[in-house]
Image (cartoon, rainbow, N blue to C red; front, top):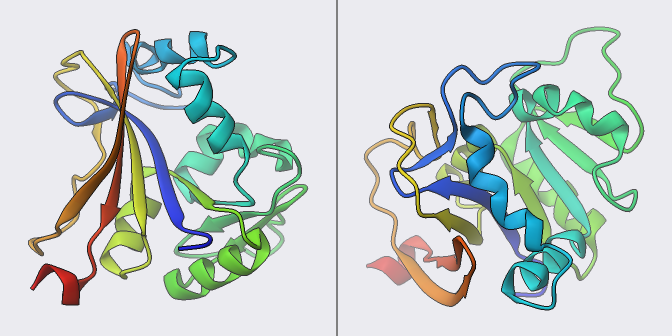
Length: 194
């Protein structure tokens, strides 16, 4: 696939992507920063550096609204001026997102716009809600999970509200680094899973 829509997410072994009480001023929740210690090696030549460079080589970003707001709307520029498509349930009159960001209310339309904007580069996804919506709609192609060897015990889970549908994944890459295992999965399509 030329430009997959790919989730990039740090996650604890028990499935949490943020600690409890994630909110403005405490965006990762209590103890949630632990999930991002691997970023200390983002400028290295090792696996974490490779994964980080790949993430920044994406051509567009899809974000959930909650993630977008907690991140201070990234001041309209997530990385390198790529378009930011914010998947949201509603858009309030007069609420104009900054810089390269725009609101989109329909999942398939959001995926189509992001793929077109990314050209031949992958599309990055941030946020559990956006990832779940794209996965349910059959628009999520891959997941890059940065699995951190910690049990947070509470917080925000990545796959909390997926529903009861069975989803098969194929492990296509595994990179070990200090304090993290980077796992890339390809999402099997319904016809492949049967």
